[in-house]
Image 1 (cartoon, one colour):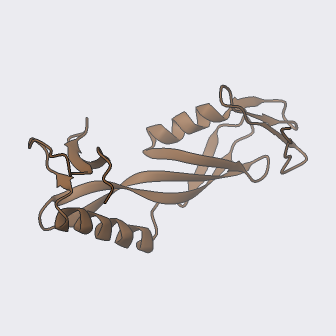
Image 2 (image 1 turned 90 degrees about the vertical axis):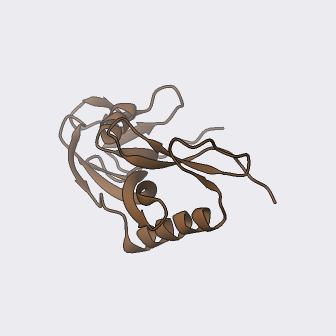
Image 3 (image 1 turned 45 degrees about the vertical axis):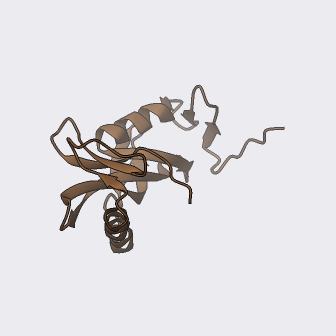
Length: 156
């Protein structure tokens, strides 16, 4: 049995895999959460979770690309987690985004992760053939940036 959770009296949230809809009872406006997710993606965020806080705010867990410098790879953009607070306008669109930068701890974790991949020879470079033991690859995206991507899984 699916329980409906109403985090705020003026907000009704219906979560279903096909159509996520945020309904603001005060204004009567409907705005698709998938539309908000699409807008955040256009701003460089890969949304993982959206939690409504009030009728005007939501918390978003996402990844964003952050440049990491490594001696062997040079600068590479790595997905790092961020926690955003998104304020909505009276029509349910995005008015403001807070917390768009990763924490220093998340950046250090990403730097360590890239170093570990390089040290263990699990990182393929652009233009080079990848081997079966490499779990990640650096690819060039549409903007010409080097981006770390997951390719294979390795179990020891």
